[in-house]
Image 1 (spheres, helix red, strand yellow):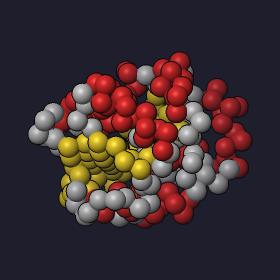
Image 2 (spheres, one colour):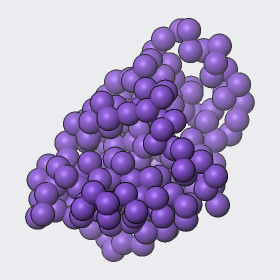
Image 3 (spheres, helix red, strand yellow):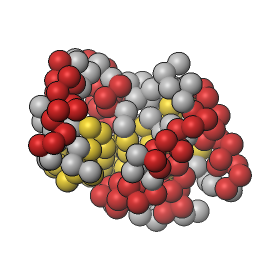
Image 4 (cartoon, one colour):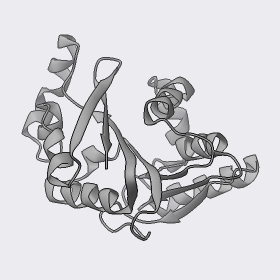
Length: 201
C-alpha cells in the first residue's frame, strides 16, 4: 500500500521540513474546527492532525481518520491510544468513503491530493461533498501554484505529471466546482508553495 514504508519516520520527516505543529494548527484554524463538530481527516497518515482536531472538538465531537496504508493506520491507532485521544482510525480511501450522507461538519485533506490521478481526485471530492452536511467545510492542503518564483525551478517537472499538473497550474478549483461545491477560496500559502483551499457545501 502507498506510503507504508515511510510510516515509522513520517512525523519526524514532516517536522524537519517545516510541517510540524504550527503548520497543523494553521490548517485547523483555516478549517474552523470547533467544539462539538464531526470531522473527517481523509488521508490521515499517522493521525497527528486528526488527534489535534479531536482535542478541539472535545468529548461532544467526533473525529475519524482514514488512510489506505495499513502501517500508517497502525501508527495512528498506537499514538492515539498512548495519548488518550478520542480520534478513531480506519482503513479507507477518499473515493469510497465508508460513511453515510451528511455525516460531517468538516472534512480535512492534507497532502493527499497530489497522490491521486485526476479521475480519482474528482471522485474523491464528490465523495466528500456527499458526506458533508449542508454548510459543511472541505479544507484541502497540498502543493499548488507557488507564490514565490524561486519554487518554480523545483516544481517545474510536476507540470508534466498528470497527478499534479492541475495543482501547479492553479486549476484545482475546477475539481471542487465539478464535484458540486458552489464556490472555493484559496486561503493562502505555507512556505510559498503549499496551498490552502476551502470549499463549502
